[in-house]
Length: 451
Image 1: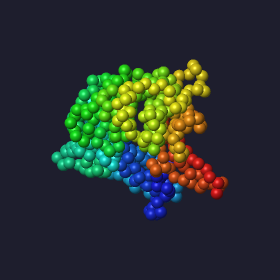
Image 2: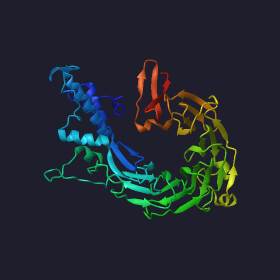
Image 3: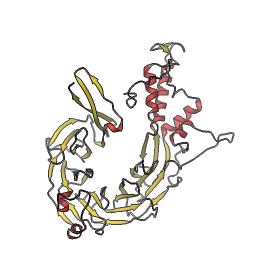
Image 4: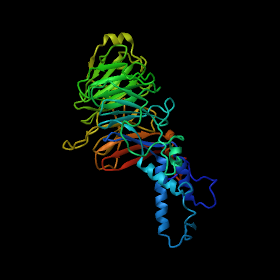
């Protein structure tokens, strides 16, 4: 609901504002810095300010309400029609025009042929930075700060847009869709022989991984801006659809060749392990943290598998993110076919029903490593990663193929706790999913405890 990040009504609200209006103002204020970034099949990358879009939506709603009022001074909820309009959406005509532009998004740049993937580097190390991959086989690094386009008005003066200035830290961006090469990227990484399918930035923001239709995994140095890959890894027989870092030297990748490969940058360009369990292309990977040496792989046939890095390295007592050099050299491209746990998302579904690619996300509200799985059947299953035991299931509510799935924790400040008569309901996080049915669904998870 409105104001969920603020924990309720601001006590310093003005006397002329009712509670719903004050909450709306607080909600909009809390959206500073929140952005929506999307790449299109036409090749453009556009950015929206969530704050500006919501402000425009509320201004249109209030304008429609005032048109239905019989008198400009007719009261609504005990106040005049003009008094209940949010202070953040009572704007001048110039501001309204600027907000109209913000609804259409702001053009950053793009790729010829279409944008295929986007990654946001860690904000702590690379704030206001964006990585994109395209059909043109290029990886581009964009800055959301340095783009500027100040267009003079009819009198020759440059007009300042309050919406755009607060959106990009007082740097304005053009809202006019131009040529995809008209905006200069900070860096362009070249080397792939086909379209880019996945990008993953390292936690420190200096390096990134990419996978493409040329069946290769490439490691790049973003900080050096050399434009050429540090390492090119060959071994997959299909498109590379997933890439992840695991420790300082180990890389994990998944492919349409139905395998998951583990690479060590100290051991050359061939994989040290090939994990082959799935009978369909691998659709997703989920890695645990450094204290949880487990990885979950999902196949388009509904199969799920848990892999233990300690077993792969030959010693369960060995550090989860380190593979000894001796093991790397002695285990040249070993094939592993038996995971430590096997599951199937579609085990209870009729064989005639097609599930589609399975998507994974970390479960919330549990101390152990558990995860969610979802596919086109619209069911969200929860599993224990180490044992493969099913912990629960629920319907997502989607009526078509699921295109995106993620989970969030209480630290994301999306939810707050509330008290009930029979106990205390504590929100532990939730899931966010989107589908080709045109809906985005947010579900909250809670745990009740007796007083």
